[in-house]
Structures are given as structure tokens and as C-alpha cells.
Image (cartoon, rainbow, N blue to C red; front, side, top):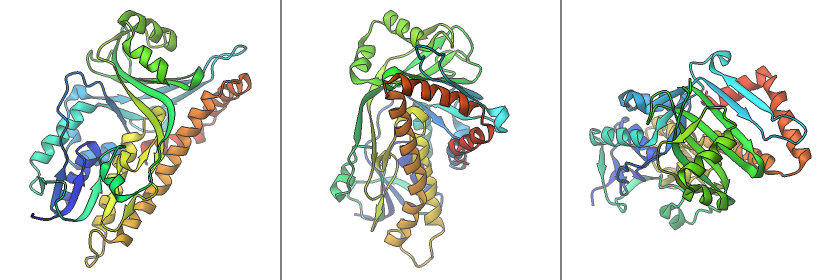
Length: 373
């Protein structure tokens, strides 16, 4: 069996981006794993930060996306839950106030996957191979259920939240104007509306609604009109009248981090290495950050050092330790804080949002971290 320099296991956005990035360095890359067929009912959206957009632009993928597959976020409004004796807390971010072009970009997941697949077909240094193909380095990008990670004996024990995320597409009777909205609700629910262009330009949202498993299941099978009524009550009419514009899908939520993210001849990236709550929209950004970091480490390696050298790969592990650990801890702390049922905690977190809203330097620091800058 003909060997390759790097074997990438996993054809999602992280694995595909890594294959393109390493191939651009002239390395022979083998891509293993079955590609998921395109689905007409795919309602996934990704919130990408500036660092992720820069990587995809460098890979010649971003500028080839259809215009209606991307939507910039210029403002974001975060609301707490309503306490009995006080209004909900409120935190807002503005791209203009932060001195950036946009806070994030919402992209159609299926469109991005399709464009990555097209780029791979035209890459002369990437070929489809068997999972057993010999390689100096094996990059595991298979997602949270990675069989190859399990075969290595790497510890990965997800802490289940007992919640599921529900996603769909919505159409509003008012233009979104590039404003993303998020509500922290009782019971640890987090509801996010992401401005989007499909199915109706300037009037669409991607919905990500995280809630307890029983409630998520009820929302999944609920009659369309009943679902829209629940949605309207949860969003307090802030985005106008919202109507379903696509199918509904759910997936379980958990927090996890691999015991080791690299070893002799192997490295973990994306959800195979870490899982975080989606409330900050940073899951894929962390995975693409892994791609950028591993690519930099490989490009800067000494000429005599093998690709699978354990010390080389430790450089990648060290670089990714702080950002992935910090994001996991932050999202977990926020989820636990807003899930606490006591009135005292409710008042404290709402006052905290209001106080943070007045701290411009802190908001600027948070924006820079979220943008990956």
C-alpha cells in the first residue's frame, strides 16, 4: 500500500481544512473516511470568527462560497432571564464600537462542506485512501465518537449536560439587520438567533435552542404552529414574528477534553480533541484553530525532524491547551450559572450582565478573544 506523509481521518470541515492546508505545503495527504452525502434538509449554520475566515480565505475556499451562504453579524444582544422583581439583564456588542468590520460571520454549513469538497477534488496533493494507509503522521478529525482515538486508548469522558441543542431555520417578518440575539432562560436554556440569508434574504435566522432533553424532544415533534408559539414567547417578540423555514434537528450536548491531544505519530483535532457547549458558537472555531496551529508547527519544523516526531507534536498540544481549555471552562461556567434555579443567583447573573455592559475595555477584550485575534 502506497504511503502518504499525512493521513487525515475525517472529512468534516476540520479534516478537510487540514488536508488542504497541509497539501498547500507540498505534503502528500491521504484523506480517509466516508463523506456524508449532501442533504436538502440540512439546517446547520456555523458562526465563524475572523481567524477562521482568514484560514478559509487562505485555503481559497471562502471567496468561492455563494453570496447568500454567508451573513455578517454587526451587533449582538444577550439577555438574561426575567427575575420576579426586576427586568432581565442585557449585554450588547457592536462591531462599530469595537472597531472591527463584523463580530462574526454566519455560514451555511452545507455550502461550506460542499466548497471544501470541491477544493479537495482539485488539490493535486490530496487523494482518497484507505484508513490503514501508512503515514508519518495521522491526524484524527473524526468527531466526538472517534474510533481511532478510542483505539489509541486516549481518555475522553464526556460530561453530559442532560441537554440537547435544537436547530432549524426561521423566517421573520422584519429584517434582521445583521443582529444576532441570545437569551439565557430558566433551567439552563440558551436560545440563539443567528442572522442569515436562507431561505429568505435579510429575513432569515439560524436557530440554536439548547434545553433539557425532554423539552428538546417535545419541541422537535411539536406541531408547527405550537412550536412557533413557544418560540415567540421565548424571544419576547424582539425579532418580530418568527415562522419555521426548515426542518428541525437535535443533538446531545456535553463537555469533554481528551487526556492527550498528541503522541508519537498522531494528533487529535476538533471534536475528537474537545467538546464545548454551543452557547458561545465557538465549536468549529476551536477546530479550525487546531488546523491553523498544527499547520504552523509543521511548516516551522526543523528539516531533519520527522512529521510524526513526538516533541514536534507537543508544540501543537501546548499551543492549543490554553484556548481550548479556557473556552470549555467559560462555556461550562456560564451554563451552570444560568442553570442555577435560586432567585439570588438569578438576580446576580442579571445584574452581572448589566454591569459588564458598562465595562467597555472588558467588552473589547472579550470581542478580541471571540474573534480569535
